[in-house]
Image (cartoon, rainbow, N blue to C red; front, side, top):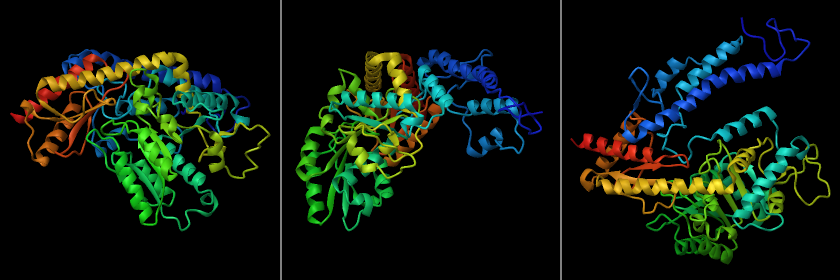
Length: 511
């Protein structure tokens, strides 16, 4: 019989009393017995990473903590995930959670080096738990007073780091970097061309500029706002993957010559593939010359602002009109946690505010406290709490030490790859961000055949999963190359192990 829950007895008649606190305590205790071993397994497996092969369980069997890899059809059969007519109660819930953990990628494992995020942290788990308990919509101050204050305090502190230091500097949380970038584009258009807020794009043929290595979310934003993806012009990059300011200027002049309206430049701090940082000061001069909005997509690389050794890469960021930073990337906050920052939040309100008297009850206070009045969202989770509690727990100095460690690991990975003599590097040294790109080339000899290089890259990426490592790859001039991402929790042994594994696999493929 299904267990009793949420104040209802088994026959569907409401109980006269609620028992949610005891029920929650019981479920938390049971779920904890599943998730703590899940995390501990990743911790224990870290000791085996330096070997470049899988560790052994208590029975001497090889075990892959990172993932129990299955094809989609196989996974459907094994999960047997169905939504029932009658609730399955606690036992059914725990069985499903157990399967979910078993067949999910364990991002806590050191071998997860695939994306620009990794596991969260213990304090991140607590933050997510608190948000779930509160279940508060951070749209108006009236229903979310504490979380509103925390978001405004946190985003202002972040804004100040980038030298947005005016009295109205701050930011808002958005559902991921793509959401932040989209919001910035709408704020830019509605601010520079106020009539578009009510009348749309009209007869203006707008043009958006972004680095050729910029994130695809800029094209998505152009599609959503009715500009169309063809309105996004890619600006050529230099050999390091950074936007070429002169090329930007030439494209702006070309757009104007064609009767178009160039209005928005998306520059990048930490490009997705190469980890490059654009020259913000030079780009800002061009934006000011032509009256364009400068946005910095610092989703990945923006958190270097905490590090005295790395923050120079953000030189000129204070010149931006808006800036995206994702603490769920470099700072390992829980997904998703993205902040859109700016020098004056009153501009955000003017661009996004609508007359919703049933929701926003504005007073005489010049400060905006109803945060949904600044964004595209009404329903808003208190995502800023995820990085706020981490900042409280580790401190800014703790963030700096973590980031510096991660950059040390990226440089260490580069050196080991280069010293092995079996790889051709694509990234420069030291790596600009936390990703190292390279080709597998035993003996240092890389064929000119792109198809061969791509096939080799894909085979190594696939075979690494069998050794407990996940990496990605991207297209390059000589075929697809491997991309390995480190994070603030990556250990030296992990770096040594993945290099050892790739050397062995490369030689195995060549034999």
